[in-house]
Length: 231
Image 1 (cartoon, one colour):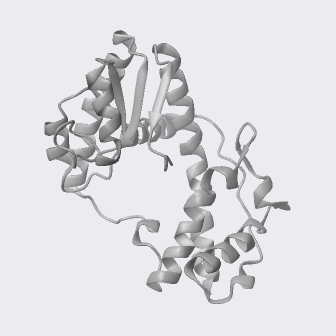
Image 2 (spheres, rainbow, N blue to C red; image 1 turned 120 degrees about the vertical axis):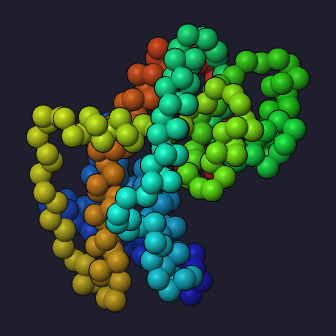
């Protein structure tokens, strides 16, 4: 069995889990988009990682304690993004480029996979703004300084979600009762952790979509450009 066939077989079993007398595939996250449409690729990669490394991806588990360096990076990303949100609305720019927070093409200060695209945008003097997926790694500051363009960090939305969630008076969703983990054998505990992680992400996903939808409606964006593996 290969890593891909293993992950596919486990995802199929995962999809058959029963939540509150309903199959997981029938749990809807937003409108007509169900749980599996939104998180399926991520869940597949989690099982694939487990097969390849013989242990779960450490990013599945919440980190304990306070990380000062990470906190400073997040605060900076929020400050940059607030400026970016204002610029997005006021500038009325019509092109939004979604990309990874990487600079391995120094000419256009972007992800090398999109260098040709950026080259055409600059050549034709097309005004644009960037929405970035960042990892808050050791290169975060370097990339922010080198880029020196208005940008939106998608992860900055999570802070607004935490604030909203803390002061929200909305009733919490009904508890989820899941069964049939025994069919996963030694992977029962891992599957349980996986399910809890993605169920907990539903409210955050809804908030992100709502936040960005309202923001884009206030802007002049007409075109979205992104890499093929947009998450």
